[in-house]
Length: 544
Image 1 (cartoon, rainbow, N blue to C red):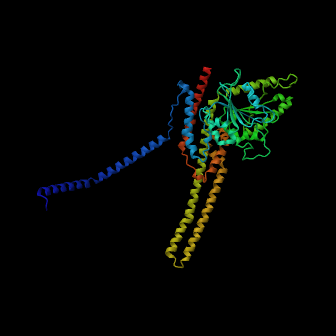
Image 2 (spheres, helix red, strand yellow):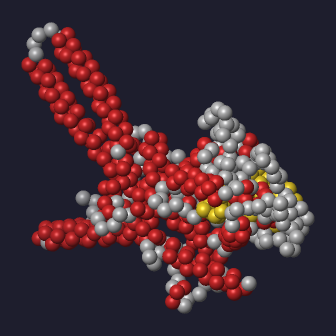
Image 3 (tube, rainbow, N blue to C red):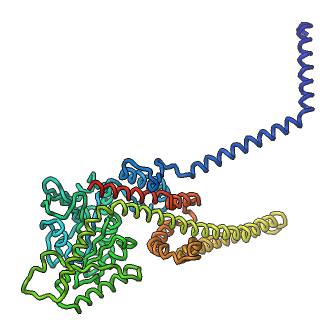
């Protein structure tokens, strides 16, 4: 009543406009609804496509380098730096993320660190002539020799331009030109006390080149009592230490003497456990053949060594065995030899040539080790993923049976007792207690059943391997896969044993395995690394 006539007129006009607008909206509400639905659908579709694009983008390999066609004429300024970058990226982007999700990080100690000096590992029984051979190679007497065990540690020998230097174990663990040595800390102080390096100023006429290190190892012997906790009585895990050096060595020189041609228990353990899958690095030597008196003795020693090696190297063909003796040993004019010593001298020169060639094989071995790690990781992911899927399926079925077999009848019985029962109240309470006890017993029984089911799956890993790689066995024998599986199988068993239950293993998506396949493809990263190594060898030959 306090409003003026003009104000009332304005309000009436505004009300009329609002009513007219609502009427128009009511007439076009279907169009508005359709438009809203269409807009919402378009927005949802665009969001879904964006999420899919981001997911696919995350799955793609984003290399910090470009794979160049080196065979087609493209060039790389620094092949060695490019090799280091590619190998480091494969480890950081492919191996480490998957390894971190597996129990116990099974591939942690297979990864390489740079820089690392090329290395030759010398292994053999005590009194097999290891130290004598190394002294001959160096051109000076550095390592003690003798019939009895003379060296109880791992000694790294390297040519030095300056004066002679000796570094103890703790100092060597922080060696800047050998970063992987830092990983040896995990073997503890008992090993550090038996680890050292001798940097030697050698004569000009020595055969030993700069930039190559030779590792002399303790002679392998049998202890009267074999204790697993003391790793054969050495105070540290000798087999694991040898395994660490063997995986990083560019050449493994295995020396045997005619008196003990591979028959000691510790040497068999080293060959079967420490060097499994590394026989491509072996140079096997039957040393001291000048001590044999006749061809019969030579045949007996050679045959015994071949038989022993056939038990630990899973190949039909016996690997090449170099027969030789150390330089300076045969200079006895009064002794009449019936064996062809000149042929043995030539074999000795071939062994020395293999040792000196180890430096040029360094990057090829790095690439082979990286490829082997990727292939083993792929196999582990496939087999453990198949076992995990089977166990989870079985657990889901068991849970379904329990729900439908006990849960639903229990609900029906509870409902009937609630609505129909008119007797004493202790009867429903007693039935509920009995049903709860039955449920508890059933759950315990099913838990034990699933535990036994998991054990059966672990015992039947070979069938999972055959199923996962069935496509490869259609037309070919795939002996390389079976050989790799022999190495990977214990690792898979340990992973499954550490995961309790197996269903708790993290899921590894198929696209993560596809990324590994892309790196191993014929035009992938490993192929690129091989071309880089070839280019590096060519440049070093040209500089020489």
